[in-house]
Length: 156
Image (cartoon, rainbow, N blue to C red; front, side, top):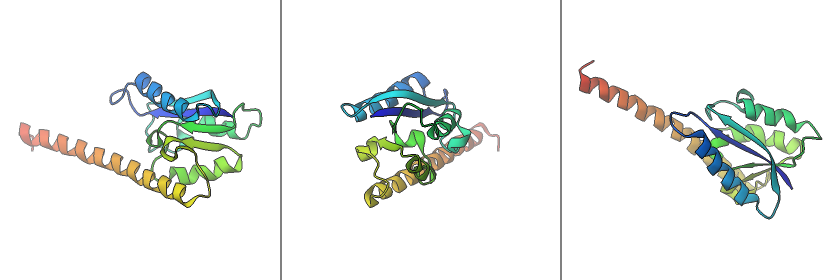
């Protein structure tokens, strides 16, 4: 099986893009070992997970390639759910992947996502909520740190 790897890193301020890409790619390679090879890479650097795939340049390029029967790959492998999906994005993208006959492989399910398995659907739902909660928590903590600094500095 031929795989396209998709990964993402949000900002250079929070993560080193080179290290993050290498870690995500390594997880993807380990997941597909003995089952196929990664022949294409799509990696967004500096793009928030909250953006829909259509607004992330590399994710959009991957989606555009879905309709091309000569794209050179049969499946997508993702190194980490949170790097690819946020909130309900999986639920929006899965039917598109299925329509084009593209399998999705993720470490969180130990391999290929079964579009019709209830446990996989529940896992994706839980991961989407967790990803959304992580962003919300980060925003709250960032705001609290800013507020804390203002109070400490006497700016209020």
